[in-house]
Length: 80
Image (spheres, rainbow, N blue to C red):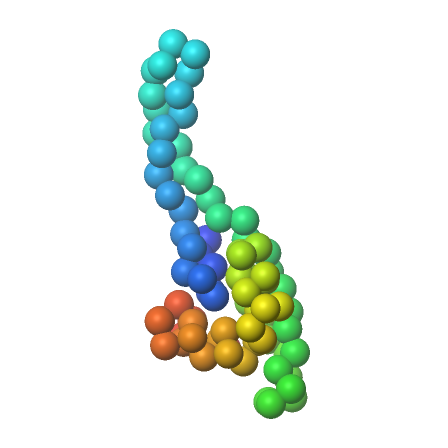
């Protein structure tokens, strides 16, 4: 499975390592991802999400069902 947040859609960015002599080599910046389980009371089951730290804060702010609905509309999550 790729390193993409299923709620916010965050994925790896490309940048440069810059040495003291200002030499640049390519590198990747990965999102802060966790595999976390949430309970869906509507369906009475647990779901497992690969989610970023920003996604965890978003779920605690808006609620799980609202966030999952928005992520499904944007195409970040296919089925949960």
